[in-house]
Structures are given as structure tokens and as C-alpha cells.
Length: 225
Image 1 (cartoon, rainbow, N blue to C red):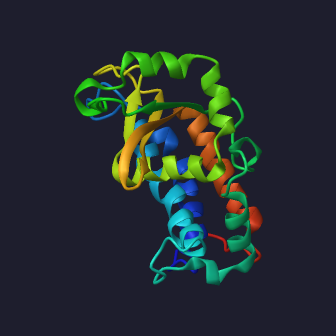
Image 2 (image 1 turned 120 degrees about the vertical axis):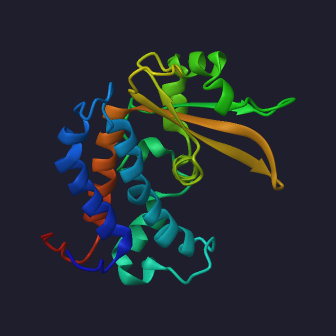
């Protein structure tokens, strides 16, 4: 497997291959572990899958990157699709969106923001994400906002592991992720975005994400050794 010709599509594709091949292995308990490593593996491998196209194709076209890593010039068809599909239209219409899988809640800053490292996901946020309006709220997000929340959560460590009830429970099996990102106005933090999904649905999303990239490219996809 040689040097990628286009990091923004080649690396996500390779990560998807690794995800499919290694998932059974990391999902098993081994070496005396009480729980498998599938949550950690899924989070780690998804970071370049999601962030590379955003950082190296979308941001340069939006004038939000320095330009020394601009994969948009490598494939005009792919660059056009990334720019067109990540914009102000609702994410429910995006080709990589899983309807009914994502849940969203916004928390205004108020007097202070919760300390998520110490407290985990606050009860009121957990209840809001569990309610039906959270499904509608997620689909109503602008695709650009949705991708920014996901990108920021992965890039800056804004991720919470949740149990089957959507709660932060130490030692409990992880079945969901919650991606957290700040909302800023005039360079000041004014609130927090919370975007939640089950691990199963997140795996499905990654497959659709890579499929979207593949479908947009105008160049043949090389076979991986």
C-alpha cells in the first residue's frame, strides 16, 4: 500500500477497510480486559476519516485554511461535491446523513458551562437528547454546522462515552458517543452543541461518508494491497 495520491479520499477509504477487517477483533474481550476496545478503536479510526476531507478540501475552498494542504486541486469533481454538500442546506438532505440516527441539543452558556470532564453529561442534557425533538433538531441543522460539530469534537477531544441509557457511567459498556463543540460569537463562547449517536449508527454513518466521497470522485479508485 503506497503513498496516498489524495489523502482526503485515500486515507478514509483505507480506514474503512481497517474498520471492516479489525472490528471483530477489537469487539472481543482479550488480555484480561473486562470490556472490548471497540469504542476506542471506532473513535480513533474515524478521526482522519471525517477530518481530512473537511480540513483539506472543504476548508481551503471556504477560505478557512492556509492553503499549503489543499486537496481540492487534485480532483475537481470531488472538490465540487464537498463544497456543494457541506453548506447551509439541512443535513437531513445530505447524502451521508442517517435519518433517525442523530440527536442534537444546544445549551446556551448562561452563567457558566458545565464541567463535562468532572460531571459527565448533565442529567438535563441527557433527558433532552433522549426526547423525540432531539431527532428533529439534528436533521434540521445546517450541514456545515453538523460537520463542524463532528469535526471539532474529534479534533479537540470533545467526545463523551455514553452507556445504553445515554448516560456517563464509569465502567459501563459504551454504546453511544456524544460529540461536543462550542458555539462562538465575536470570538466568545456562547453555548455548547451536543450531537449524539449510537456506535452502531456511527459505523453506518462512516460507511455512508466514505461512499459519498467515492461516488463524487472522478478518478478510478485504486485497489489496495
